[in-house]
Length: 560
Image 1 (spheres, rainbow, N blue to C red):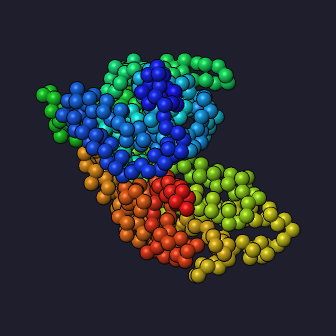
Image 2: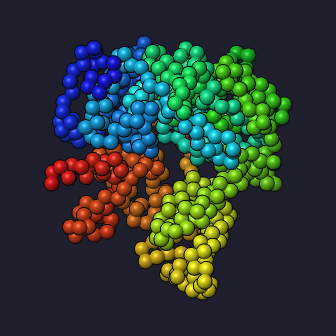
Image 3: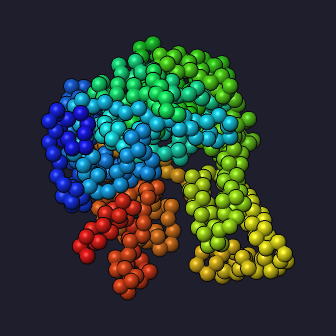
């Protein structure tokens, strides 16, 4: 039984405290302490996995999934992420402190039965076919987040070293840097297998997952066999992990882990089963994988074909297969695309730049914002929306050779904004339109700006080389390495006074004291509010998590 009034799931549920007490309890939680307790358990799970003490792993996972603090963190995760306002089949949302606390106290595996998923379809980039998403209920999402806390330390230890997607402390830029290192030198491999798995998330074998994933089998079956509802009809789920589930990326990663070992056993080891550099250097087989996208380097086309057959056999045991249309073997001089970048050698020199597909997609997004959604917006609103898009896209691409792409985007932006301005004033001349929307700022002319807002110059964004993560680093066993890495990452990405703010607080949230990711949802906090005479200066400003700021404001409101 999973009633809202139950803490144990027994037939005679224990009554939970009233709403006011629950709300006060949620607002008084020490999140720093909660994170510390859960992190200690996760570190123990990772260490036990490393030592292959599977009985200890199982025992520690049970402790974590029944931990009060882990349940709190699971609820916080599903109520602060992007899907917090999207409900499942029960139409329930946890928007109040009381409902969040009630949910945390009611999480239990006793008699747990997952609700069916709400099926929706979203557009695929550059394709007419739509991608199916399964949206669990809030309760099921929280349960998945809870068990993900216990499963992720295991997956980090058992993961392929050159796997980068949906992993803590790793990103697409790390995959880019390792791919660059494989092809950049004169003696580097010249052939590459571009792998694409057909419907990876939708076709993973349930039997393989149940037999091989080290977690509570009954709970895992509930996650996998929940079914989905579409247009009022209930459909079963016989294969795959639902795209939209919190735990699905971890399950998919664990299903694909082991591919690196298969390739190493064939191309890197001798008859005694030991890695031999002579074989490794001769075959030049290396793997880079980001979720279900991967590339395999090879010295010759024949070796690439052999690697393809090994991958096909590996996937077949997991209920998966390669897409024949998208799985290609290409020469490095012809180039290949990976994660929105094009890798290609020109006269022996490897150049990595944003792919044509990525450029076209971003230009389409800008056109949609300016000429369709923003045709009636005020100029300052349009500038704010465009700056968000520009920051996001350039943040992703600014570690490669993107100067030409950035300059091209600037040109496209001007053309689109000129069309936007002319459409608003069809009876005005060019001089009148230009002087209304474009002004001089310092040494720059033709700046699209208002008194308060200014459009970013894309070609002024610096190119900063990404420092790749150490391939054997584990975020649960070496937290200091990743904390320092996050801080340095922020120091590279930020500039001006924002960089000073980040430096002054060592990359930690002012409210909770926990390390921040530069990609986290964050806000500027004024220690002395502007309404009370506080100044817009560095000593009075601090970075805070968005959810921490929400909790802080709620506490201030209650105190007042």
